[in-house]
Length: 158
Image (cartoon, rainbow, N blue to C red; front, side):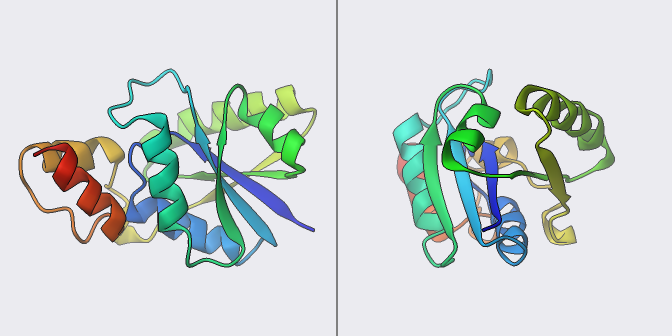
């Protein structure tokens, strides 16, 4: 069974993330969207809500599920039997960071490969930070995030 892990903060999950997940789900038997408790980033949305939103957003994909994890993503991948790490690349500026992350994960894991996916061009500019900023200022993100995230953000930024 080919199992892949897509780790991230997902603060919140966006349609760009979902595009990457959908593409990965066609190449792997199982994809685990692994929501990190700690990533070194300041998160606006708490861990439980980030996990819940991810689980709801991927619920229509039969071979995809969300999971929570703490610690190193490579350790979690080994624990659940994932052989591959999934990452998304939006722009050239992402490449250097993502390449160094992939190489470090390979070293820490004893050889786990990373597969990079490009989201559809309509999501290349999209980031969770932008989504939060637009929502905070009262803008619409309806075509940029799943409906559950849109509703959550409307309540969060009331």
